[in-house]
Length: 190
Image 1 (cartoon, one colour):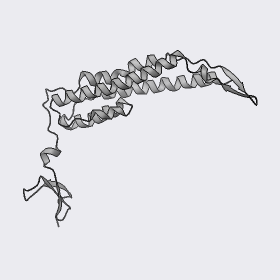
Image 2 (cartoon, one colour):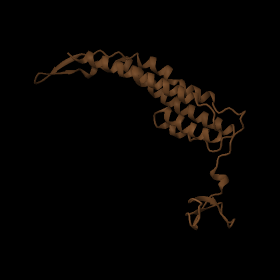
Image 3 (spheres, one colour):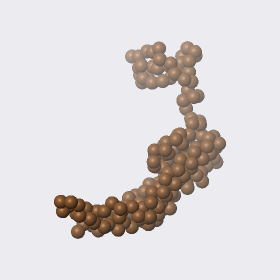
Image 4 (cartoon, helix red, strand yellow):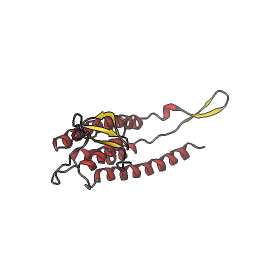
């Protein structure tokens, strides 16, 4: 009875990189060399936070004031049958269009910043940094979390200030957004 737990281990035959040990015996499943699976650590003097990740983390500071530019003015109309409703034309103001356009610019900036950050991490010696393409999923937080999962593997113990800063700004923005939504909803009530 073996006490070695199941897992991928260096192939004892030396023909393959790794082989699966099922806890009792070697199986026919082989994998890549362990050097391709592990990410080597980067030296302590190499910084892991780039200017690009800081800009991405601080984007909510710019986004929040722009989102406050939208001040809807609700006009009501009465539909046939006496139903009172909000006139949709009153919602789509210049401020609304400005916020929507700015949102698209922030989205594009997030993708570009993730690309530059990914490229810089590779230049600094990070093997297989988190793919920058994840920034396309509408939120920099997804890229930032994935990025720091990888960074913590190659540089254990390093601080994650851009990630924590972004989370704090998102929470502040969420609280302000909820408060504003409640105020706007109360404005809509007759």
